[in-house]
Amino acid sequence: MNPAITRRKSFAFAALLAAPALAATEEKTMFDDLIKASMESKKGLTFYVKGQTIGGAVTKFANGFVELRSQQFSRVVIKLDSVDAVAMI
Image 1 (tube, rainbow, N blue to C red):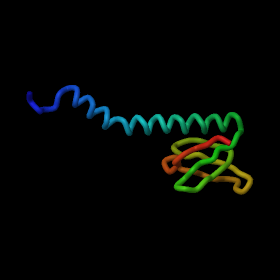
Image 2: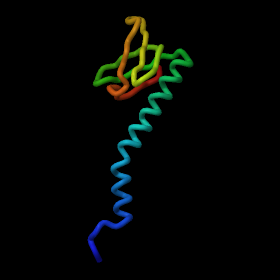
Image 3: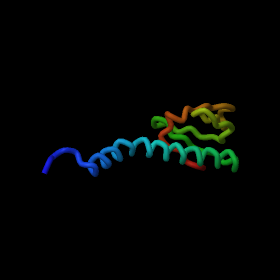
């Protein structure tokens, strides 16, 4: 048998290469869903960014950024690429 790459192996390899991109897309969709739900329900979110927590109610959401307001700050802007996790309060 020839040890060359078979069609099955090439499909498996392609799936492994595509997995991180698909996971990132799914993660982005989940973040987007929570942010939109927060805007509609006027409930706050907690964003986890590099070990820090930032809480507030979403006021704007566009172009990879989300704007919040809280009791402490009237305006907080977070770049979504830097967000590790999001939790609804």
